[in-house]
Length: 492
Image (cartoon, rainbow, N blue to C red):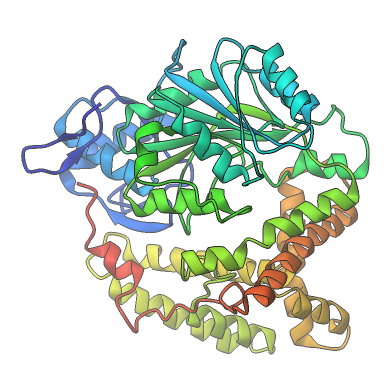
């Protein structure tokens, strides 16, 4: 579908595409200012678009289809910012999709995967499995096409090999240990009605029995590394959903002529691919209504090894995407406030917070509800930076985090750091109510993060690179802040 534009060249959303506001969007000044999106930001809405925005708010999660030029212009801007998401109805097949399944051994898993893909054109790419005859027999039993690499080249190369043999407009990459549930393409394919969308990912859930048996199975069911949650999102660096795994991903075939998988990356190739699509001005969307089951590693050694391996991609990604792999991006003002609180100076911390809010209020002068908005932005930023620092202490800065845990009984600073590490984990337990008690949940969350963090530090050591370990400090009000830029931004 060709992109539509208004007479003044302002882009419009595709005709007939319904959209719904993101649930995390917040409104100020009677709807004239909206915050949220991916990444988070502030946008002012022109008066002409306010009736359209009000109608979207009333429509709720079901959304509505803009049918005016102003409405479609507003929709385009909201979609681009991640403040709204497309909600097209499901569409039955057949779909113009070829499925590429990279395979390396694990023929039982491959057979289960192919069983879940009836009626679809499927290409299995055997990446030089040690048991090629078993892979061949499995592919033949399911009537799928098989190609084989003479040497093992990794999943990125396997996907590229399969894509080169495809003639359909869409390609679905499905790992051999994944099993899409019925109707998955009916939910994913309509997202491509938006010409800006280059790829769409489903929600990937661990395939564990219910109720899950065993400590690790219960944890995996509650917090799989591949499960990105139940809310739609536009996927981009710095957003709530910063990447999607290529364990299952549907992609426009023609975009692979611009952006291909990096065959040098054995891990992290999915992050790199999604970020380069974003750099080309294309959208990647996460659609959690479409479900895919994935076989998790439920042996402790294998599970922790896999978490560690995920972390080892950090240094290579930092080389390819400078500044995007920083473990934390705290504001200098927030660091000052948190430092004052840590050293038992609540009055000075309150003064720092009020000063920050006042400066932000000045930058937002002329914005509706500027005082309320400034207070909200400062409070949210302080909480977000505290959580990000705690996560970094559990992961990339794990040696420091371990020292803080040990020194907590005797050090105020160590106790504050420990609180920053553990409070978000306990809050997550309250929100999720996983089938684990708080102590075991906290222990497993910290072990999970530690395994990943050791992978990051190992990759930094091997690459002799500090980038995956260094924070990226924000200096608000020194240069034009994000809030100041947002002041001049208009949705329509």
